[in-house]
Length: 623
Image (cartoon, rainbow, N blue to C red; front, side, top):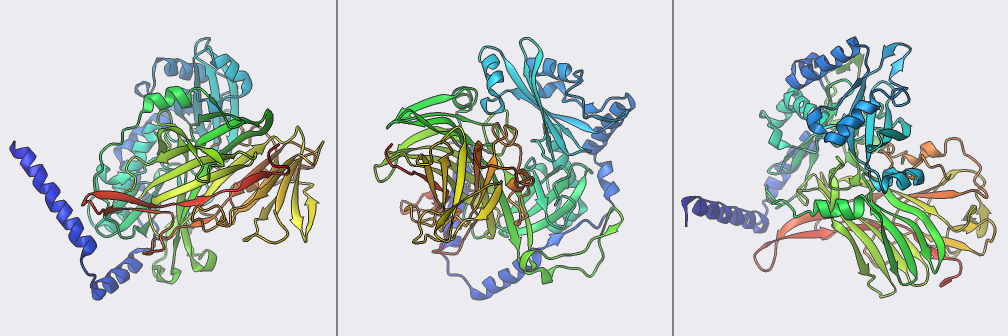
């Protein structure tokens, strides 16, 4: 046995002994009290107090701004991706798009160039294509390209036939932001590492290996990023010994630190290092991301695929030959963390941003909220950090009355703190019912999180449809797009909602919210339901990040009901947004995960999932 092997074994043994001592030793109440005091004093908002010109001296920022200035001087307005980030097809696609008038249409105001960045150019995923493009891309090599306009806060997405070098589709998404490029990810890391506020808060000079989630878009209340008109990400520094994480919100629109916040991690025995997971990336991409799969079982026929940022999607679902779902998926997980005790914030010194004095305004009940939007996606050609683990699985339901189609998405280092795991699940019952399910398996960055999965369900009960809610025992049709707070408990009146075919109202589905009656230890959905008229650009294909992570007054879908379009007798889409609070209290865990020592003396991951989502029950079961 070599000396290196002996040293490794010794380190492992000492580490396991330390974990055992930490987990099983009696807790001293005075230490707990002292730790609680420290946690309260450190859990606070940190706004920049330093001259922001410090970031202009960061080499990565300097090089980026220099390239941008040179570009504008040449009369151009789109900063291209470097060739080392692109394959040979992508390089040609970029050249084509940078000379395409329609793609460049929004890059200038008059003759003045506006700051735009190419963000990514990758092989097109099925979820990004409309039906016309799918026909071409089945036999041609197609690429998807995205650029971001920093001035107008608009993302432009193009689908290009890389064989014939022609643009198939160009779509713009005002007020929405794409996944960021590798260059901007490195810049965000550099800004966080050079921020004086970060170094002071951490008490030491951090390094790049200390950072996680540098490419995760994030916002913070009371910061310039709150209204999501700036492109912001949230590099995070986790301190497992102190059970805290420092979130550094980097504003890539203004190239500076926007704000930071300490958040508690909660007690954990998760090791500092976890080996790489065995993801079969190529298999997943080839079989589930770049083509669709058809499943036939128990009278159901389901087409499904993995998307770039909208998780697992089912399409064109039929039961006994009748089409019932056009599309169903979870487009986002909104994750926010609640800061208690705003009175502890240090307001003795005035803080200025861009020459304006910042006021410390308390949110709901005096709380402050911080977080980000999580996107689930394919393991390649997507910068989503919650990635597909293995492929979609087909399993029987516990009661033997149907089956489920499920996909696991994980951060690579889950269940370490500040890493997440979600499950997309579609349950199909033998009586023709189906349920859209979101499962959160923790662990997140703290024990005070609020999770909101955004579910998009495009039913197909008829070419034209009607939506009803039960009002004082009677069914009332919805004439216009609207939203409703889902009842908190089941009543004797019965199902609270139904969607029916306009041509035959005996065909359709009751909608049964989750109150905890499905035997999965759920604490209920506490959801908001929205009904909109179908528009392809409103999520029929991969949808960019929707809404704010942390404004609890808005779920993001509100943008689609602002005009309150008539919906009676139209093609309808149901949006369902549960609201879940996690819990790390011993014996009360929910939306939580931890690593514990098992009965066999080994380390095991223990999960306390939270499961949400509505069930659609046929008006006439079994038909």
